[in-house]
Amino acid sequence: ICRHYLVIPVEHIPTVKNLQRTNEDHQLVSHMVKVGKDLLSRDAPKSEEHRFGFHQPPFNSIDHLHLHCLALPFIPSWRQVKYTPLGPLGGFIDAEKVLEKIKPETEVYS
Image 1 (spheres, rainbow, N blue to C red):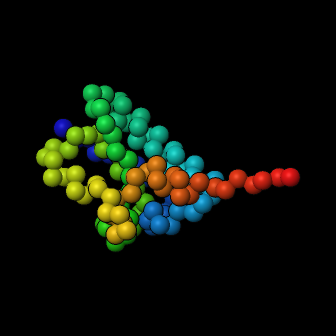
Image 2 (image 1 turned 90 degrees about the horizontal axis):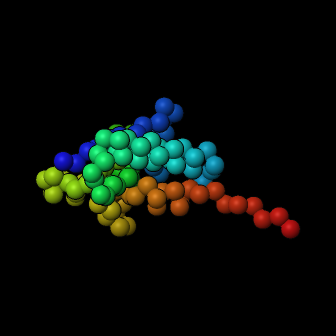
């Protein structure tokens, strides 16, 4: 059976689109993913695949950032549609892709 957790930050951030390329936001999302991984490894130890990500506007239903943490497989399998990236249309975005987008630029000193 698919385990599904939401990891929600206390601070109000409307959507994944509001995350900035800052150490603070990058650390927040990294921490959210770690919490999700810890929960799934504890509660779904037999699951061989996990998915972590966010719904992007206009596909989000709540305007408060929350990370979906899923232990796969989806049962029934049609549920996976809601958690599939839709390319340029948005939809679901993988947490690792978000982390790449908001990774702070490192300063180069000469």
